[in-house]
Amino acid sequence: MNKIINTALAGAATAITLLSGAASAAEWRGWNIHVEGYPNTVAMDKFAELVAEKTGGEITLQMFHGGTLGDQPDAIEQVRIGGLEIGNFNLGPIGPIAPEANVVSLPFIFKDVDHMFRVLDGEAGQKIAEGMSAKGLVPLAWYDAGARSFYNTDKPINTPADLQGMKVRVMNNDLYSGMISELGGNPSPMAFGEVYQALKTGVVDGAENNWPSYESTGHFEVAGYYSLSQHLIIPECVCVNADVFNGLTDEQKAALTEAAQESAVLQRELWSEREAASREKVEAAGVTINEIADKAPFQEAMAPVYEAYLSANPDLRPLVELIQATE
Image 1 (cartoon, rainbow, N blue to C red):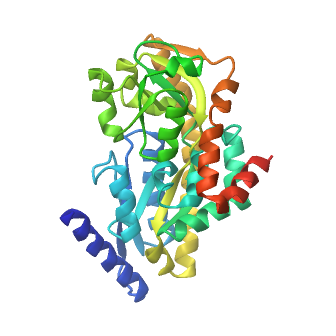
Image 2 (cartoon, rainbow, N blue to C red; image 1 turned 30 degrees about the vertical axis):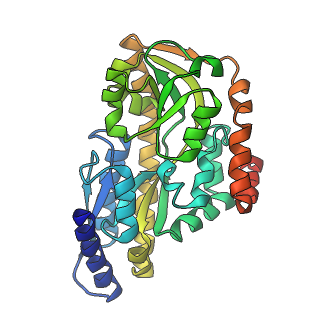
Image 3 (cartoon, one colour; image 1 turned 90 degrees about the vertical axis):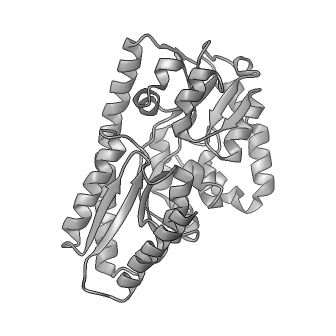
């Protein structure tokens, strides 16, 4: 807690400097959970380079990768309160904070990755951004995180029945826990860094994630079955503290946004390459990969998840319908 308070005070000092229009350069810190060489890590380093370049050195950004400044929920809170200025976050853990962002965590809400980006680039994306900004997180650009599928230790998953009784790690979001429960499994929320050991020791039987995360963490070494459910397509964002961003000049805001969006172009290119390479690597290692011939039973099982979500959040029904209507 003291660490969060201290970093919050440091972030507040940065915001005050910006708001006062001081001529001295602002030195920011950025958080990223991914390892060296990961598409997001390369893109965030490029973002930092572009920020310094486009602001003429008025803003510099030091990136901290691999979750070295804390786990994702802590880092999200630090950016919200100003302890950190920048973060590259998955929208999954942001959902419980900003209800508009939670709609992207509804299982099977996106048809595919291209559909997700069409949504984010349109009216629905603007509404999501406004909801996040109101909670202290201004999204500057959207990163690709691919489609998430199930992987586990003992058998392929082809039908919901295959998940019966299975302990599955999920991110800390009630929607994901509800998804696993409706499929007959036992949801086990835990930090990403704990998953390898949990799979290895049998604390959980499986997890769910994209190809690069499955490969880069070595999860494929202890969970050798990967089933292409593609149940979640959740973007990541480059987010800046709202007070800090609002204290910038118009020119600085434009430079920061432009830098983030250019980094997103790079990230998406690298992501596509990395997905293919990660799949090739785990296949070569002997992982059993199975296409799910019929995803309809999985999708149909999500009806109670949607019903419970919309009953609790009736004001978000138009946003959900807008996403589903986006071609």
